Length: 221
Image (cartoon, rainbow, N blue to C red; front, top):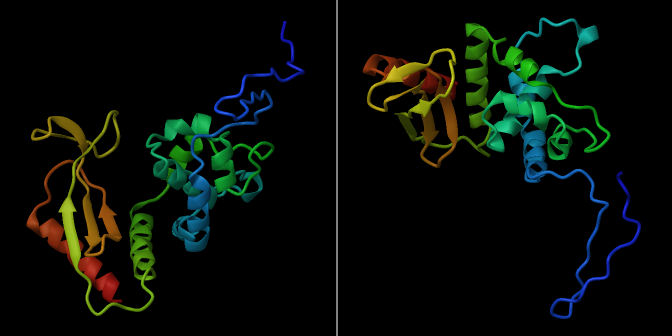
């Protein structure tokens, strides 16, 4: 039978300081840093920017989680190093994630589930992805207080191993693994400019040149 502890045990002092035991702890979280990231995301509005690039086909009367909230939850998960959408099954009840999405840490409603995240990730078509890519470049350009006289672009591909049957995955003989090989672009100061998700094969010169031309046109605009 479960019995509540009504009194606190008296423990010996350690180096002149009291040692206390408590049994009334509330819900705990190991991701308290999300409270700081919440402030950054609120100011930048990145989740809403990306959500505005998508068309939501759901019946508004039945929507429980907006596209903005779903994207914000996914951003927070990735930032906290939860790469797999399946982690949402437990994290949707986590106090820190609830706070990051403007909900009460204990009494607030649960966040969206893994199937909801998966449907969101499969929602964009090619045109929506292009819009989102352009919005990321605008987001990068807005990070400057004033337009710089010169921007140095650092462009490279990087291997990203996968451990499932994700779309676009490809076996790379050099790395001896399945994965993606996205093109990643940073500027000379380390700011992320954009990425291009692609199968795990080294991009040829024509593909890279086309990507660079699109970037330069968008940044100049």
